[in-house]
Image (tube, rainbow, N blue to C red; front, side, top):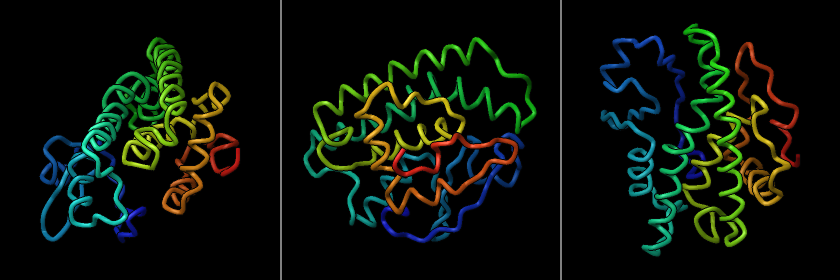
Length: 202
C-alpha cells in the first residue's frame, strides 16, 4: 500500500490471543486483514490482487502473462515454502514463542531453519543471475513477498548476507525504497535488532 501511496491505519493484532472480535473478521485467525469500504479482505495474495485491480499504478505485476505468472509463483513460494521451511522454524521459534508465552524454542526446528535458508538464498542468487529482480527485470510483488520474510529474519540476525552478493544488493535496493523505510523503524519490545537492520547500505 505504501508503494502505491495508499494511506492506511495500521493496527497491531496479537493473533495468539484469538480475540473473538478478530475471529469475527477472519475466522482463520490470521493477519493481514484489510477493512475497506465496509468489507473485510484477508490473505496477503487476495488483498494484493484487489489493490492491484483498483489501484493499478504503479503496477506490481508484469503485463506479460508469463512474467505475471512467475511473479505470482514466487510470491507464493515465499509466503508458503519459505514460510514453512524458514520463517516458521527461525522467527516463530526465537520470537513468537517468547512473546506469546507458548513454550521454549525448539533447537531442532532452529537448526532446520538455519539449514533451509541457505537453499533459499542460493535459489534467489540463481534467479538474480538471470534477472535484475526476482521475477523479471523490474520490481514485482515477488520482491516484496521475499523482502517481508527476510526483513523479519534480518531483525534477529538470521540472514547470512555474505552468502550472496547479488541477494545482498537486491535487498539493499528494496530496503532503500521510501515504502520500506518505515518498517525499519519498527522495534519489537524485548528484541534488539541486528546491527545492519536499519542500515540502507550495509
